[in-house]
Length: 198
Image (cartoon, rainbow, N blue to C red; front, side):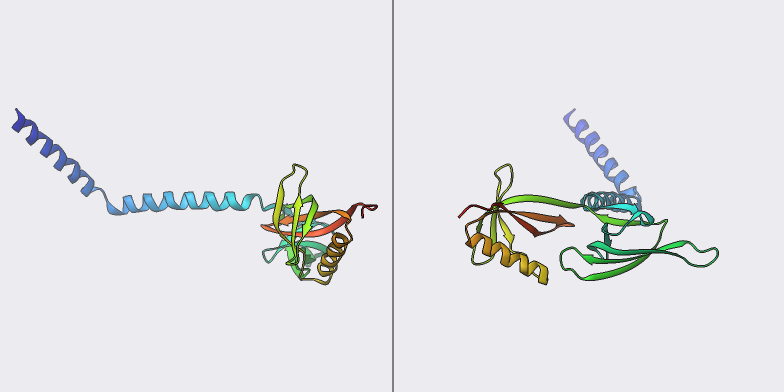
């Protein structure tokens, strides 16, 4: 009996191996590649979903926002023109990077979608400003951050950094607004909370 069951087990085992070996190799490899690709596409789509959203180009106005060359920009000028008798209306955008102030230009048919950056502004109370330019700050929920530096890179941001340093040195309470878009953050404004503080 033991010998018979061992023999039948051996034949079943060999039979399964034989079936697996007979499966077309391209079937297995294409199935694996397809599932890998699907997972990758889903993850990348999910990761980028919260950074931008589509908007029809013809509805983007001056002082609105737009992604040009992969950068979050504020629109400073927009014009719409027709290209001949049967041409589609085209929008011409002039915009500046909200972090670097670099100028960008782009053109797009008004009926097409453009990417618009999701922009988040959050206010924090300033706790400390170090000599290295690190700004410690606290939000409304008493969460403290020590990972933001004084703004830099443009004349405007350098002036803001000096104003923050001077206000802190004067012992005045202040709040800063942090602008966040497409994975970047920067302090972009400040206000004095208690003018009478010394």
